[in-house]
Length: 144
Image (cartoon, rainbow, N blue to C red; front, top):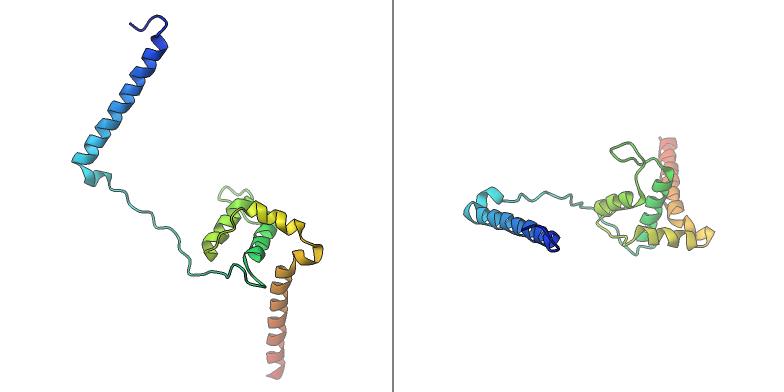
């Protein structure tokens, strides 16, 4: 046996049966010793922060712009010291802010499809906040 035109088919069936037998043995062990097969749930990071997705000044699109800008800067790194990929940075932001970009690449297209004066509105909003707070701080120091 094992020779002839059915040899390949026979070998395939033999391997399939050995795989099925191994699975049956594993199931049998799992039934007899369930405590040995307990799976520990990995604690996943759950942030307390969130953003309003359709906020006028800082929503999903604005967050996507920040992610895209960080990606283009090549200053966000992976553990292997290589620059992070766009989807990696987006995943991190999704976890931090409990949001979902859907496809970050679609957002990237939307950003570049916008009129030039609309592309940076969210970043200008953030920049102006910092400038305003800086001026307020300097005014408080002048009053002292």
